[in-house]
Image (cartoon, rainbow, N blue to C red):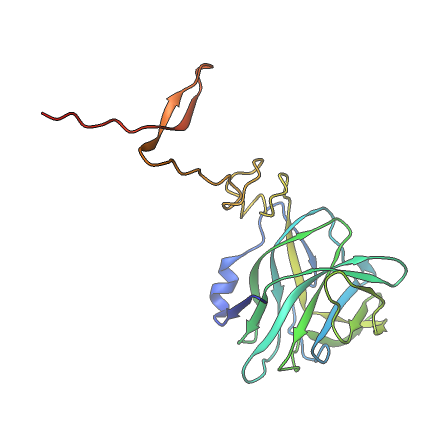
Length: 241
Protein backbone atom coordinates (compact mmCIF):
# COMPACT_ATOMS: atom_id res chain seq x y z
CA UNK A 1 0.00 0.00 0.00
CA UNK A 2 1.37 3.42 -0.96
CA UNK A 3 1.85 5.85 1.93
CA UNK A 4 0.41 9.37 1.64
CA UNK A 5 1.35 12.48 3.56
CA UNK A 6 -0.85 15.59 3.32
CA UNK A 7 1.07 18.86 3.21
CA UNK A 8 -0.99 22.01 3.66
CA UNK A 9 0.57 24.58 6.00
CA UNK A 10 3.72 26.06 4.49
CA UNK A 11 5.01 27.68 7.70
CA UNK A 12 4.97 24.44 9.67
CA UNK A 13 6.92 22.70 6.94
CA UNK A 14 9.60 25.37 6.93
CA UNK A 15 10.12 24.98 10.67
CA UNK A 16 9.81 21.20 10.79
CA UNK A 17 12.94 20.06 9.02
CA UNK A 18 15.55 22.75 8.53
CA UNK A 19 18.92 21.48 7.25
CA UNK A 20 21.22 20.53 10.12
CA UNK A 21 24.74 21.84 10.67
CA UNK A 22 27.25 19.56 8.98
CA UNK A 23 24.59 18.10 6.68
CA UNK A 24 24.96 18.35 2.89
CA UNK A 25 22.24 19.81 0.66
CA UNK A 26 22.25 18.95 -3.05
CA UNK A 27 20.13 20.36 -5.86
CA UNK A 28 18.62 23.79 -6.46
CA UNK A 29 18.94 26.73 -4.07
CA UNK A 30 15.15 27.18 -4.48
CA UNK A 31 15.68 30.93 -4.86
CA UNK A 32 12.93 31.28 -7.47
CA UNK A 33 9.60 29.52 -7.82
CA UNK A 34 9.11 27.02 -10.61
CA UNK A 35 6.85 28.44 -13.28
CA UNK A 36 6.65 25.59 -15.81
CA UNK A 37 5.24 22.07 -15.83
CA UNK A 38 7.96 19.38 -15.45
CA UNK A 39 6.17 16.41 -17.06
CA UNK A 40 2.89 14.58 -17.58
CA UNK A 41 2.08 12.20 -14.72
CA UNK A 42 3.04 9.52 -14.03
CA UNK A 43 6.60 10.62 -14.65
CA UNK A 44 10.07 11.12 -13.12
CA UNK A 45 12.19 14.25 -13.55
CA UNK A 46 15.74 15.08 -12.43
CA UNK A 47 18.73 17.38 -13.01
CA UNK A 48 21.91 15.30 -13.49
CA UNK A 49 23.81 18.62 -13.53
CA UNK A 50 23.11 22.23 -12.55
CA UNK A 51 25.47 24.88 -13.91
CA UNK A 52 27.97 22.20 -14.92
CA UNK A 53 28.10 20.65 -11.43
CA UNK A 54 26.84 17.11 -10.87
CA UNK A 55 23.84 16.84 -8.56
CA UNK A 56 24.97 13.81 -6.56
CA UNK A 57 25.22 12.74 -2.94
CA UNK A 58 28.77 13.52 -1.69
CA UNK A 59 28.53 10.79 0.99
CA UNK A 60 26.27 7.92 1.95
CA UNK A 61 23.62 8.56 4.58
CA UNK A 62 19.96 9.45 4.88
CA UNK A 63 17.87 12.15 3.19
CA UNK A 64 16.25 13.80 6.21
CA UNK A 65 14.30 16.47 4.31
CA UNK A 66 13.75 17.82 0.84
CA UNK A 67 12.68 21.23 -0.42
CA UNK A 68 10.43 22.32 -3.28
CA UNK A 69 9.29 25.70 -4.59
CA UNK A 70 6.17 25.50 -6.81
CA UNK A 71 4.61 28.72 -8.08
CA UNK A 72 1.05 27.42 -8.10
CA UNK A 73 -0.86 24.24 -7.34
CA UNK A 74 -3.73 22.58 -9.17
CA UNK A 75 -7.21 22.60 -7.71
CA UNK A 76 -7.21 19.54 -5.49
CA UNK A 77 -3.44 19.72 -5.04
CA UNK A 78 -0.60 17.70 -6.54
CA UNK A 79 0.88 14.34 -5.63
CA UNK A 80 4.64 13.80 -5.68
CA UNK A 81 7.43 11.63 -4.23
CA UNK A 82 11.15 12.18 -3.77
CA UNK A 83 13.06 9.78 -6.03
CA UNK A 84 16.61 8.47 -5.46
CA UNK A 85 18.36 7.40 -8.68
CA UNK A 86 21.72 5.71 -9.27
CA UNK A 87 23.90 5.92 -12.40
CA UNK A 88 23.92 2.48 -14.04
CA UNK A 89 25.92 3.01 -17.22
CA UNK A 90 26.16 5.71 -19.87
CA UNK A 91 22.95 7.72 -19.71
CA UNK A 92 21.14 5.00 -17.74
CA UNK A 93 19.75 5.38 -14.22
CA UNK A 94 18.41 2.86 -11.74
CA UNK A 95 15.33 3.73 -9.73
CA UNK A 96 16.60 3.05 -6.19
CA UNK A 97 13.73 4.16 -3.97
CA UNK A 98 10.93 6.67 -3.59
CA UNK A 99 9.56 8.44 -0.53
CA UNK A 100 6.02 8.44 0.77
CA UNK A 101 3.58 10.16 -1.57
CA UNK A 102 3.06 13.75 -0.51
CA UNK A 103 -0.11 15.72 -1.24
CA UNK A 104 0.99 19.30 -1.96
CA UNK A 105 -1.92 21.66 -1.34
CA UNK A 106 -0.20 25.07 -1.26
CA UNK A 107 2.33 26.90 -3.46
CA UNK A 108 5.57 28.50 -2.26
CA UNK A 109 8.80 27.44 -0.63
CA UNK A 110 8.38 24.40 1.61
CA UNK A 111 10.49 21.74 3.27
CA UNK A 112 9.26 18.18 3.79
CA UNK A 113 10.60 15.75 6.36
CA UNK A 114 11.94 12.45 5.02
CA UNK A 115 13.90 9.37 6.03
CA UNK A 116 15.29 7.88 2.84
CA UNK A 117 18.66 6.09 2.51
CA UNK A 118 21.06 7.38 -0.14
CA UNK A 119 24.51 6.22 -1.31
CA UNK A 120 27.43 8.40 -2.34
CA UNK A 121 27.05 9.19 -6.04
CA UNK A 122 23.27 8.77 -6.09
CA UNK A 123 21.15 11.49 -7.67
CA UNK A 124 17.77 12.94 -6.67
CA UNK A 125 14.63 13.65 -8.64
CA UNK A 126 10.90 13.50 -8.10
CA UNK A 127 7.92 11.48 -9.29
CA UNK A 128 4.67 13.20 -10.21
CA UNK A 129 1.58 11.05 -9.70
CA UNK A 130 -1.92 11.37 -11.21
CA UNK A 131 -4.56 12.69 -11.21
CA UNK A 132 -3.29 16.30 -11.47
CA UNK A 133 -0.46 16.73 -13.98
CA UNK A 134 0.19 20.48 -13.85
CA UNK A 135 2.88 20.91 -11.19
CA UNK A 136 5.12 23.97 -11.54
CA UNK A 137 8.44 22.70 -10.23
CA UNK A 138 10.54 23.76 -13.21
CA UNK A 139 12.19 27.07 -14.08
CA UNK A 140 11.49 28.42 -17.58
CA UNK A 141 15.06 29.75 -17.99
CA UNK A 142 17.59 27.63 -19.89
CA UNK A 143 20.93 27.44 -18.06
CA UNK A 144 24.30 26.51 -19.60
CA UNK A 145 25.65 23.31 -18.02
CA UNK A 146 22.23 22.35 -16.67
CA UNK A 147 20.73 19.10 -17.91
CA UNK A 148 17.16 17.92 -17.41
CA UNK A 149 16.22 14.27 -17.77
CA UNK A 150 12.69 12.93 -17.93
CA UNK A 151 11.06 9.50 -17.81
CA UNK A 152 7.49 9.08 -19.09
CA UNK A 153 6.09 6.89 -17.61
CA UNK A 154 7.99 7.27 -14.35
CA UNK A 155 11.04 5.23 -13.35
CA UNK A 156 10.02 2.42 -10.99
CA UNK A 157 12.07 1.04 -8.08
CA UNK A 158 14.55 -1.58 -9.32
CA UNK A 159 14.24 -0.52 -12.97
CA UNK A 160 17.25 0.79 -14.94
CA UNK A 161 16.40 2.85 -18.04
CA UNK A 162 17.70 5.75 -20.12
CA UNK A 163 15.46 8.83 -19.91
CA UNK A 164 12.80 9.28 -22.57
CA UNK A 165 13.85 12.94 -22.92
CA UNK A 166 17.06 14.85 -22.14
CA UNK A 167 17.63 18.59 -22.54
CA UNK A 168 20.89 20.59 -22.32
CA UNK A 169 21.12 23.55 -21.88
CA UNK A 170 18.16 22.70 -19.73
CA UNK A 171 15.94 24.13 -17.07
CA UNK A 172 16.42 23.85 -13.33
CA UNK A 173 14.02 21.80 -11.22
CA UNK A 174 13.13 23.57 -7.98
CA UNK A 175 14.08 20.64 -5.77
CA UNK A 176 16.84 19.91 -3.27
CA UNK A 177 17.56 17.34 -0.57
CA UNK A 178 19.44 17.46 2.74
CA UNK A 179 21.62 14.45 3.57
CA UNK A 180 22.92 13.47 7.01
CA UNK A 181 25.41 10.77 7.91
CA UNK A 182 24.11 7.47 9.28
CA UNK A 183 27.15 5.88 10.93
CA UNK A 184 25.24 2.96 12.47
CA UNK A 185 23.19 2.39 9.28
CA UNK A 186 19.85 2.18 11.04
CA UNK A 187 18.10 4.54 8.61
CA UNK A 188 18.01 7.55 10.95
CA UNK A 189 20.05 10.71 10.25
CA UNK A 190 22.70 11.10 12.95
CA UNK A 191 22.12 14.83 13.53
CA UNK A 192 18.38 15.37 13.69
CA UNK A 193 16.71 11.92 13.77
CA UNK A 194 18.86 9.41 15.64
CA UNK A 195 18.50 9.60 19.44
CA UNK A 196 21.23 6.96 19.88
CA UNK A 197 23.97 7.71 17.29
CA UNK A 198 26.43 4.85 17.01
CA UNK A 199 23.92 2.25 18.23
CA UNK A 200 21.68 0.76 15.55
CA UNK A 201 18.03 0.58 16.52
CA UNK A 202 14.50 0.79 15.18
CA UNK A 203 13.06 2.98 17.96
CA UNK A 204 14.07 6.45 16.70
CA UNK A 205 17.57 5.07 16.23
CA UNK A 206 17.68 3.31 19.61
CA UNK A 207 17.34 -0.36 20.47
CA UNK A 208 13.75 -1.08 21.53
CA UNK A 209 13.31 -1.56 25.27
CA UNK A 210 12.44 -5.16 26.09
CA UNK A 211 9.35 -5.66 28.20
CA UNK A 212 9.69 -7.59 31.40
CA UNK A 213 7.56 -10.69 31.82
CA UNK A 214 4.80 -10.84 34.37
CA UNK A 215 6.04 -10.56 37.94
CA UNK A 216 9.23 -8.71 36.95
CA UNK A 217 10.08 -4.98 36.78
CA UNK A 218 12.93 -3.09 35.11
CA UNK A 219 15.42 -1.63 37.57
CA UNK A 220 18.99 -0.39 37.62
CA UNK A 221 21.35 -3.06 38.93
CA UNK A 222 25.10 -3.27 39.34
CA UNK A 223 26.91 -5.88 37.25
CA UNK A 224 29.99 -7.85 38.33
CA UNK A 225 32.18 -5.32 36.52
CA UNK A 226 30.69 -2.53 38.65
CA UNK A 227 28.68 -0.95 35.81
CA UNK A 228 25.02 -0.03 36.21
CA UNK A 229 22.51 -1.51 33.77
CA UNK A 230 18.75 -1.77 33.58
CA UNK A 231 17.54 -5.32 33.94
CA UNK A 232 14.34 -7.19 34.67
CA UNK A 233 14.23 -8.28 38.31
CA UNK A 234 11.54 -10.08 40.21
CA UNK A 235 9.03 -7.72 41.79
CA UNK A 236 9.22 -7.80 45.55
CA UNK A 237 6.05 -8.87 47.24
CA UNK A 238 4.62 -6.52 49.83
CA UNK A 239 4.77 -7.89 53.32
CA UNK A 240 1.49 -8.28 55.10
CA UNK A 241 1.31 -6.46 58.41
